[in-house]
Length: 289
Image (cartoon, rainbow, N blue to C red):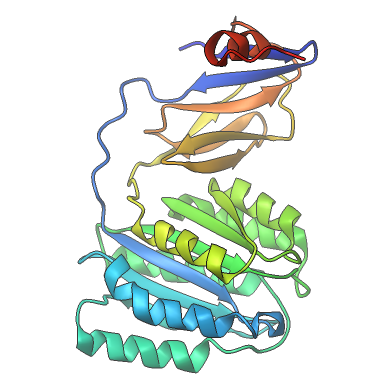
């Protein structure tokens, strides 16, 4: 299958690169192990009460019968832990234990360190492959700050090791002081989505949407892309979510049932189609300025 380029300017093209060799299969619901990593640094003090309330009130309605929820809290170096491990919130007897754990552990502590909770998530997900066979794993990570305990390189290396274990990943940039560049790189490395949430009212529906998302169990494959890729990443839209994939030596790792990926290139790749301006004018009736 041939890539298709759409000219934006003389030195910029939007490239569509097919991935799947056949029509994508209808998505089948797969039981999901939701692994939620929550920043409990001091700057989260005002927001953690709302996050605790949402988790206690909404989890029983968001999780499906065979889904599990694991919650990891973190702050600074040597300050992280698993407060829930593969819990099924199926009845009131389970819910009470969940609420007690949330109230006990989701409290503000001190600094911010991404590396250790991500390592803990990797260990947990590897364990879940044995203890909860047949389920896929989805990662949800939220932080309002900058990592002041580990280097960016070390954090991204952990995400790189974690990525093959995940069928879905979402990183939340919470508020205006979160480390957007690092969180963006984390999302790209994991082949996941980055969400910006200004405050809790904007965060709450995003969390609920991710918990209710149908997750595909498709394996990841290597896709070689050509051209002079701008920004070092490719992207795709899946059920309204923008997924990003880091480029490594001309290759991206993507789910095998993904129909296509897109990227920007400074040169044309494959078949050259109409210019973007012409498409906008023909389809939308927009005339270039």
